[in-house]
Amino acid sequence: MKEDNKLQELRKLCLGVNIFPEKVLTLIEDENLWNLWVPKKYGGLEFSLTEGLAKLKELARIDGSLGWTVTLCSGANYFIGNLKPETAREVFHNSKVTILGGSGGVFGTAEKLGDNYKISGIWRYATGAPYLSHFTLNAEIHENGKTLLNEDGSPKVRSFVLPKKDVRVIEDWNTMGLKASVTHSFEVKEVLVPKRFSFIYNEFYQPQDIFKIPFSVFADLTLWVNYIGMAKHFLVEARSVKSVDALRNLEENLNFHNRQISRYSEDIEAKIANQESITTDFIEEIHISASNSVKNISRNIIEAYPYVGIKASQENHPLNQVFRDYFTATQHYIFTK
Image 1 (spheres, rainbow, N blue to C red):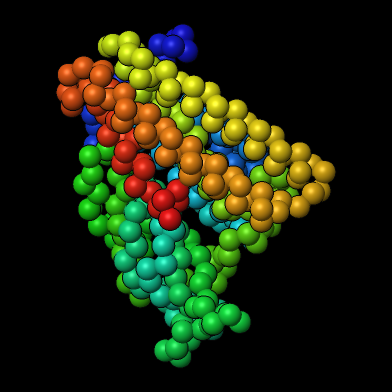
Image 2 (image 1 turned 180 degrees about the vertical axis):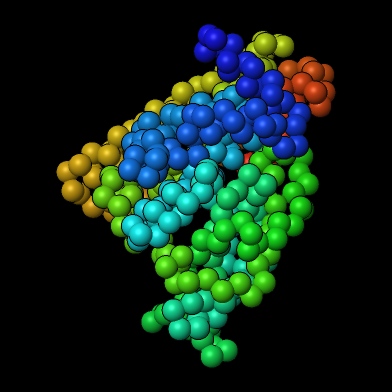
């Protein structure tokens, strides 16, 4: 099958669905996309930052939910780098397909009981919830009924990996877009979790360069390319129904921001190769650039939308879906906080 035909077939499979059909999930599994960042010795693709960003942007250009779901779930599988090797083998070798996903919020508690933690709480926004084999979550650490504190007085927090059987999915994802990302909430009730299934961001046990990138930078770049990919899809669909001058600004901005992402990715890889530190100033520069990029692209799409015709308002048209997907994605806190 020609690549263009394959792309169009995948896009049709994703159009208008509230959950991915089995054919889409099989394709993701066959292409090993859940494991973009996972080391090869654990069955992953072990992509470099540049390779992975290109793939995620391509998927978002095909379909917003597809790109978003693979980004967030492969981003959770990235936590293999935070797990000690014996735990990583246990999680990634004991499941037919390992798909991690969960919440970045601190919505629950973990009561310390020796070398175990008893976890309870309700967490929101677990992208791909029905597709997952394991859930990740952040919880405040308690001991003897008291919250443990860091030196600065803030609550101690650890992250955990739980198998799907220990989690109850709450089907509350009811949004105008990114529907097939099925980003439901989930609940955990007094589940005892061994300490080995906990981890801390930016503590890594794998040697690959990808795990030397500060997590905030990794998160910024992987989500940023989703907005670029969806906007590229909007541009193509808009021009297929009507050619309007307002689309030129969007195209120019997309080209500029593409170059920005490429430069940042190459700079990061060079710094790691040369054993240079990634400074807080550089981290902040990337975050500000990504935030401004999303604002600029959003403005361009809003400016163009009234001029592309009634098809843009028809729910069964790809142009309408990509519009809804993109502006649902803009509600993610990462570039609005």
